[in-house]
Length: 110
Image 1 (cartoon, helix red, strand yellow):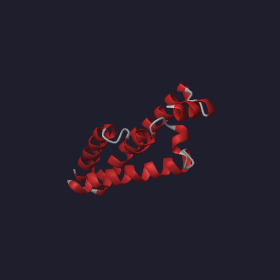
Image 2 (spheres, one colour):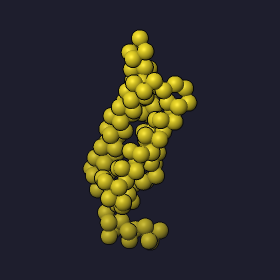
Image 3 (cartoon, helix red, strand yellow):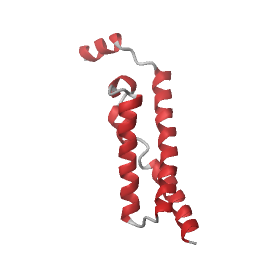
Image 4 (tube, rainbow, N blue to C red):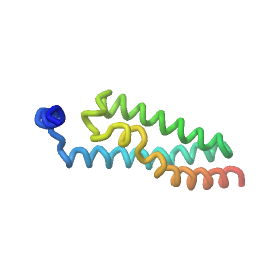
């Protein structure tokens, strides 16, 4: 416990910054989920290929966030990096992905 307390003294966690970072990641994930849905619909992807497209796209966005926004130091910007950066909002963005995917698939195929 002493190591964790020492770490918080050296690098304090500012709640407002953590909330801002989490909100920024959430906004990026929501926007990209919709964009991936538009892309999958225009490409005419169906069934598993559409979902694989979404998960690969989400992984790609996570890598970009890690490399560009977090500058490779995810623990510095997020309280729980795996949950916030790599797994957060993946399932939440799935509904907007499916919504835009089916909309644009129907528009292109109609």
